[in-house]
Length: 199
Image 1 (cartoon, rainbow, N blue to C red):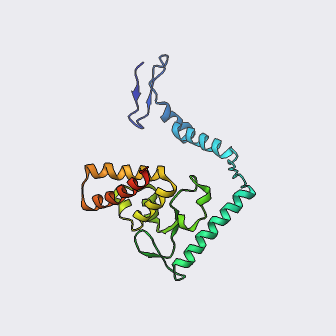
Image 2 (cartoon, rainbow, N blue to C red):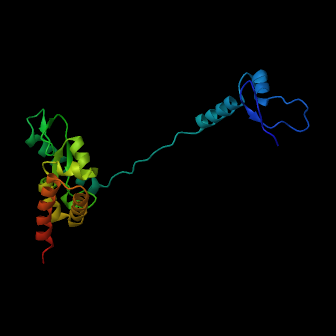
């Protein structure tokens, strides 16, 4: 069946074969009800959504053990922040800048080792940019961190799998994008890798 386009409202429709006059149903609807067919459908949809009860998101309560663990982590973070700053600004371990608010980044993620979550040596105070670089940054962003080498040595001792993932990323990047900075970082990591992997 042929599709017609209304010259007034650009509404596309298929006229009924029994009707001699090809009247646009959208124009007829506007004339009769004062709104287009689309506006009627949208209003009905909005009313339907408004009638639905709001979803309730229930946050599961933590166990006593989980609350105790979280309290230890927060205490360790607070202690590090108080010791590293003058009360108003804290130095970032990645870029060396001073910020009013810094993140307490875990070298070994809490999901990998809950035992190290509250250990001060596993926590590094970083600004938001450096924290993002350590968690999900590119190779160039990683090696620019002042704490990169030290934190990688910590990973080699406590999270060998993650150390290897980062090491192979740096090695593959160095093969395609050679530079002095990359070669220096790779050389240091290779020494740690060989020392750890040696029987």
